[in-house]
Image (cartoon, rainbow, N blue to C red; front, side):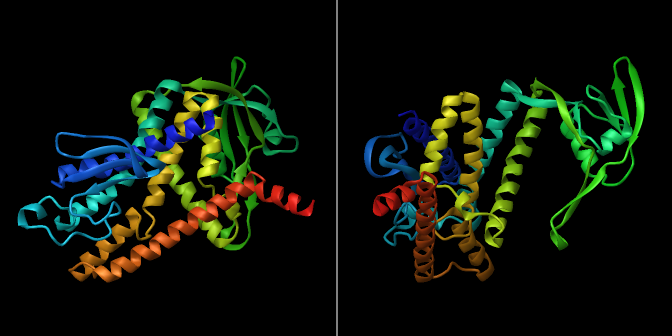
Length: 368
């Protein structure tokens, strides 16, 4: 029960944020919004606001939509041709190219902003576990052992650059493979100058290889640290765009065949993870929502017709041609996009069921 409720809560919040981005910019651009729905299918409950927009919760809670005036359907795939001049002023498809692009892009942008806000709140008010630059263990025969570093040594500077955290030390050493570095070390009441040459470690082969430095120490002291508000905002932005980079890297590895595509999860795995993090507390749940919000924004920016990214591609073509694509070409594009999205959902759900061992269960029944 916790899993189901957590999944519905997480998905509903993220869908609302995404669709509200579309809605808010549409209203600012003078577009009339007919309906704002969380979920698809028959309406469960709804109400009308003063402007006539129907706000509703629908039966199938796996997404949502904002239906704008003049659209043939919630996906903005096609427009009505029976609008007079006055009605056309409030129709989405009769707005300028930049206004339409801004409305479409606002959904994914809202997801990114929401993620930044979540991570900022977590960094500022909950804090994070961070390791101090204190030596925990020294690996035998390592660069650190050769330099004479000892457990409980606190490294306060590298080549004269002051550091506060172990991850700062890691980055500086990572960039110095086989190069001598000057370490300023506090040992008890004494301050020592120690020279060390990080071991050069190479991973991968050919043009994809990477060489980095390693001292051979582990962190010895972890503390809970809360950022000031401005640092928290910076870390929130960096975390959000770090997720973007990791996601693109993972997609590239899947396409190249260097990463197992079974890692791609669908609604079942998201529901399962939602329940698990919800039981761990509010902070893990918020963090999970931040990661999912970024993922939702990225997925919608994929250049696939039917998704926001597909609409933006159509608008780019319109800008280059000086006129919109033909209705028939857009219709074919939307059909292709629907097929791709549906196939991706089936593939992700198949992975989810495999992850749960459903297929092995049925094989066992058949073999029994």
